[in-house]
Image 1 (cartoon, helix red, strand yellow):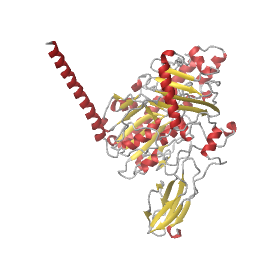
Image 2 (tube, helix red, strand yellow):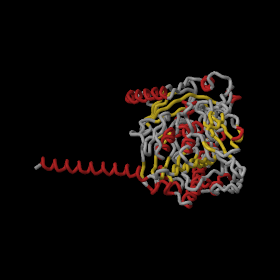
Image 3 (cartoon, helix red, strand yellow):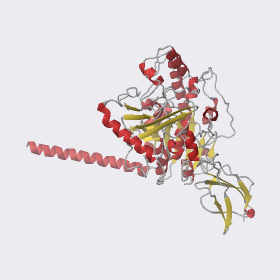
Image 4 (tube, helix red, strand yellow):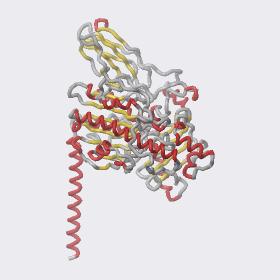
Length: 580
């Protein structure tokens, strides 16, 4: 009798398992099948953004638009940038390459030359690398950026149909699929500076690409700036910051700025819905790295790397769910291609986490790097799995804190420095100001989310230390990252020993069998061209040359070639009758 009952129970459990498995597989297939064949892609990108919103567990401020997006979409709590600062992170997003593998990891490669004694330069990825927007344009997508660039290199003219404060999907051809990026700057670190005030420029998002509208620039006055949160609100202050009035006021600004960003984001979502495009568009919301406060931005603790992401799929597929997989910024480029049915090229260093060509396995690790920030250089690398973070410091005799002048305009940073001088900081707050740092650090991010207790010397964690140490070595080798290389040596490598930035060769134009053929001897150069219309005007966007094309006689053409990281070629302008 007992054996019979056990058999019945086993059969019952097996049936449940098969049912759940079938339902899970059915759900996965349903998602891939139900997605539009050529969906629109909308990116809503904010800056310096930690997980300070209700859909990620923080209910300090109300964000109706982001909360609705989360209710209708999927929350991704484990998105990590490749750096704790914007420009290197944007290089990873734009190219699908780790910044430290292409010369993009030193913040402001074209600035602070007087301090470093180095020439201005740009990141130079391998010749096959294109910006993801250009790859989508080659597939017929209308691609716009409104309006921040900051990739550590100048974007080729072929990168976008339009990149400006007026860029909008509404300017595309009728029925053309689009990839549109809107950047919100309210949450940026500079939004904590005094005098406090929101930027007038953000009202542009309410105008829907209207090129006739002119908005004010600069900041609103204190009286003009909307207040979304009572100033006496109690805040949960991280242990590495002191609980003072100055810090509490800066936290109030953080949340007030998030509310302002949410309102701007809502304006874009309303335009999408008004245009009848909501259910044919995949919407991404994410930040460009972690939070804006001291010991957040520029560091590769989770406070500097982890940023919230929400994805809303057409018809609210997987609405209200959470996806715990690890995602890196280098995964965005292959994922976009996968979502539109294009197999990502092998050179991409990320992996698709959605779409037709979704990777068979989720990520085991994310990776990050920190080098120069403005005028100050450090060398740090990090690898993290679902629970543990391993950090390797290549300059252990140098302290963590760097006196970056831009950051020191934040009142909380000024407060920290004053309290340090007065010896009024507690141990967690003093850690950042240590004169030296260990060569290796290991943190249990599950138990120690602020990464304050180094477990690298703990014998109980020896196995995990060895695992993550080996993974870092594998990663550095796989992307050809040599952390001990100086920035001067990096520039010599990028420029192949020459004294100046390489230039893209001037493109050559020829006609054969009535078709225009354009070529460039610079390997990997993108070639853009414009054809003057019968009305005597050139279009605003540069077309991407992919194959010969036919034109009428005496047609005027302009052409430019540009490889990423090189100087663009001169613009060639001629009529077809002049082409030999």
